[in-house]
Amino acid sequence: MADHLQALAIEPRTSDEKTKMLNRLKRVEGQVRGIQKMIDEDRYCIDILVQISAIESALKNVGYSVTERHMKHCVTDAIEKGEGADSIEELMAVLKQFSK
Amino acid sequence: MADHLQALAIEPRTSDEKTKMLNRLKRVEGQVRGIQKMIDEDRYCIDILVQISAIESALKNVGYSVTERHMKHCVTDAIEKGEGADSIEELMAVLKQFSK
Amino acid sequence: MADHLQALAIEPRTSDEKTKMLNRLKRVEGQVRGIQKMIDEDRYCIDILVQISAIESALKNVGYSVTERHMKHCVTDAIEKGEGADSIEELMAVLKQFSK
Amino acid sequence: MADHLQALAIEPRTSDEKTKMLNRLKRVEGQVRGIQKMIDEDRYCIDILVQISAIESALKNVGYSVTERHMKHCVTDAIEKGEGADSIEELMAVLKQFSK
Image 1 (spheres, chains in turn red, cyan, yellow, orange):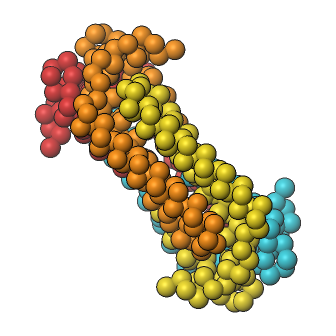
Image 2 (tube, helix red, strand yellow):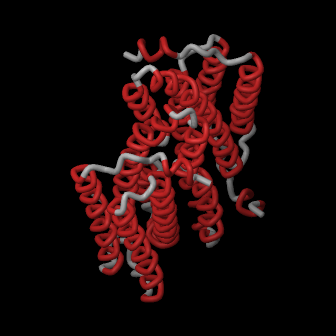
Image 3 (spheres, rainbow over the protein chains, first blue to last red):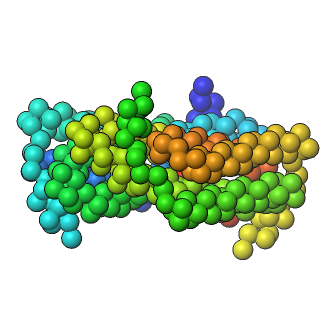
């Protein structure tokens, strides 16, 4: 469905952008492993919940960065090519899912 | 702060409960690595957002399981020992953070 | 389904608690009418979104108050009567819906 | 702050769009009054929470409609006039608040 929109996504991330994003995701990965350790060590539920909530925040922020970049590149390109409506509806569908 | 409540948390997870929880968290860890790969391969932003949203769901469900278990064990014990109010307020503080 | 649990909900809100809660809800009602006026006057979308977000926060806080009171009265009573598991599962089902 | 972006918001809602939006908001207003009645009548907390959750959903949907319209009109205009980045950052700031 999104194939023609995807083809518009012409501007790949710079290696600097990639590195930053990957570092954030590696930190999230480490946090998820940290929770496994907490479960394994019978740590207090509340402390585990606080950690899960921290990961959710971190993931949300990654999601916002991806969304902003998507709007500034893919959606902007689509609008300039007169295909804005499709691109916006595609994004809205994901945002609705995202904030569930 | 929560030390006396934490001391009430007498019932450690069974090894079966632990295994289930750890498996769910290992799957989440794998999904986070999957997103790193998607970033690295310049995959389409929308596909990345869909994956992030799936991880958020999975994490939320882990959080619900931890919360439910916490209520059935720690909060229930606290209530039976007449320390319910503290335990409930401690949980509410985390739930407020959690659903942000 | 929740009839026997509901019957446990023995402690009605004091008139002071009711007044506070009703005042908060009247404020929310006023905010919702405020948005209608903003729509009617063609106000800027972003300003409307900020207002909607403020109402969501206010409603969430009402929800937290109701949840906390529910735990301190209904759930606590249920636990003391040995029906804690049902009451906790009933609450969890709503919390899952709530944070969607 | 957003004055120059706001000035771009040239296309007012049609009277049909307004009517639909106002009807949705009037329904939300009625639901908020419904909760006041439930509080007043000492209805079961869980039933009140279910209703609050229904209002949150309805409000979120209004928010999505406003966001989508904003992207299709204001943001699209801004992009076409070369002011896309500002407009997108303004929207992102609200989205972050919104999904809190």
